[in-house]
Length: 261
Ligand SMILES: NC(=O)c1ccc[n+]([C@@H]2O[C@H](COP(=O)([O-])OP(=O)(O)OC[C@H]3O[C@@H](n4cnc5c(N)ncnc54)[C@H](OP(=O)(O)O)[C@@H]3O)[C@@H](O)[C@H]2O)c1
Image 1 (cartoon, rainbow, N blue to C red):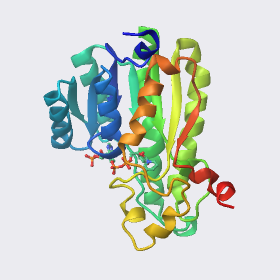
Image 2: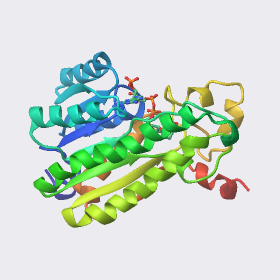
Image 3: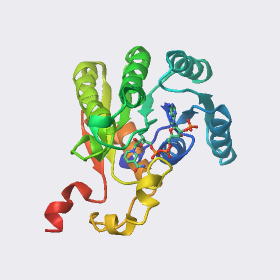
């Protein structure tokens, strides 16, 4: 393989992707597998992750499915243990599973909605990274990617705990990058804009959707596969000098007020 192309090769690497039964996580898992990694596809439903792993295997890719509700400690431990049992190492962790159970003002947000959002979107990525860290350190390096959102980078009325949790992920990555850099463990963040998935259905399946697209310089939402390339880049040697970075993939939304003025 030619020199620079080889930098994107993930052969021999083992990748765990949470929330990978559909949407962005499934695309990123496929991206890892198509670049040579052995992939652990994970979500709350064993049948759903088995189905994804089977499609990958039918395409000649290496994958297994492991059920893991990321907010449950025993599930997180089992995910790491099953990965080590099957593949013996962990090189890449993509903390992708996320939720947004409440849309409305912070003033009215139920405590349970806040807690659920923080548990799944922020606490779980931190705890799962902590479980993978010793393995990565032992191996001489690794790579963690947190899936945040542009909602973690700017204020939006009514996104409440979702924005808080996604902003927290950015600082989590930057602190981990500072702490784990000496162990050759890189930690970076991807901030998608509007991507057509089940999670974002309320945003694209409504009468105001066409009007909302006018606020996006590229005038459309992304499809999940458009997020996969960045994950492959951040997981590979092509980004070997990047850690603590926040990569925005949003069709230009964050710059829209300037570009459309
Ligand atoms: N779509 C967007 O516009 C957008 C924009 C910015 C950021 N994001 C972020 O991108 C990530 C993926 O979102 P998506 O849009 O691809 O969502 P999605 O299509 O709804 O997929 C969510 C995935 O997470 C799994 N999941 C949900 N709760 C889980 C939990 N507690 N533990 C483990 N897995 C869980 C789901 O599978 P099961 O139901 O099988 O568990 C599914 O595989 C999220 O972190 C989201 O915040 C999305």
